[in-house]
Length: 395
Image (cartoon, rainbow, N blue to C red):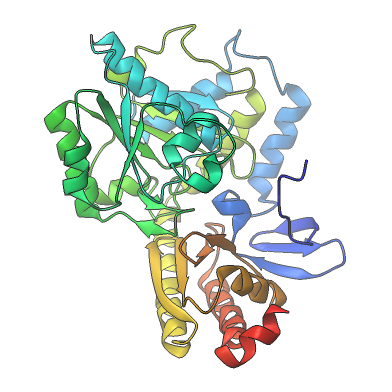
């Protein structure tokens, strides 16, 4: 199907933060498969774990115990707010499961009328029918019939609007700590704390979408930890499998206990192979000093990007984001699509985001030297995009 607008690049191998095309070109990868290849390409520990598990058993279904899933769940529980974990295959699946968990919680506590989720303008929660409705973007909804009931949208970072949207049907508040597709916009730590407070005040559940922000990308295991809060339920995917399809719903026991047999499920989710990949990623990211290293390199990259913005005021409007999920906000005269093409021409892979932002989401294993290299490649791309050169570069 003509579903994707793919770039004319075909990669045959990768190592660390590098990718090589079939025709021999080398790229520095600051997209990481849209924030997914968290520990880089060809990581020996991940490759070995997957290969050995594939030779033993790949799939058995959830009709039986899966020791790898049990171990991975225990490790995620030990490292988070959660008491229980449900594994699935993607971020959209995880978000679907999270919303079901919120609705089920209220139904089982005598309030089936409370099924509405307050979401935010600029959000992206996936492309299933319900998650398109949670996202609320008319462009994505077009042609797929009426939106799924139960999702309302308020301006990002507007606490007055949140309070005004709460009614007798509200079940929870759903938010990305950093809006990825929506322009790499971080919620302030104050706003996240206020959301936790308003949920407690009105008996709502706080549901965090950490599909893109989680698994170390912010410099902590989960981005909400910077705010010192705990959600009631959270979705995860992308980086937790290091490039292998894996998603998860993490929840407190008060929420998780209502998802009894028959209420939710998946054929592939939580299989031996995927959870082995998840365990290998946990080994790397939870190693002593790893997250401190992510935070250090992220701050170094941020400093370099601020300098880049100062050197190219006709191209760059500002730098935003947090950790290793950063956005270069471009001037209206420079489209992020053109800028993305310019970075490819210079040997750097990036990802476009909303609000005319160029997104940087490199593997978490990048070094300060690779961060400096990326800034230099971006500098060259910016020179291509200066007003006198932009029209030529866009051809």
